[in-house]
Length: 150
Image (tube, rainbow, N blue to C red):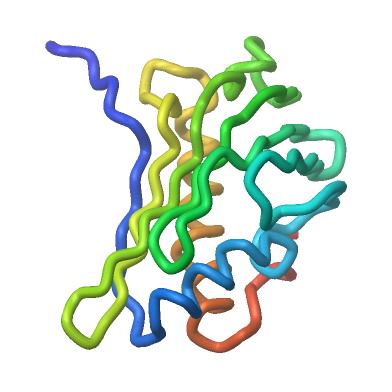
């Protein structure tokens, strides 16, 4: 049986404009529950994300194309629920925004989060909730579902 090595991805459509989706994605504090340090909306900036004593990661914003794309490079991480605590190091988190008729498609990919990694099940489950529920809610209603992550 061939080992799956595909990056973790999620896509969905919303009624909002690409600009509204882009702005919501860059309002990271509005959809990703935890503590933040740093700016999350300028190329070259780095921000730190912490969730309790379970997750630490430092992301560098490497690409921002208004209304189209956001890319973060994970430059450092410590995931305290797995053996290889820095599994996210060097991975990329990509948001692609595409106008589809009167809708906007959000396509999220965590490049490097692959099924052979120990974190895949827990991390893909967490990303699924965060991207499909909290981020989608922020885009569509102006309010993320942060409390439901606790």
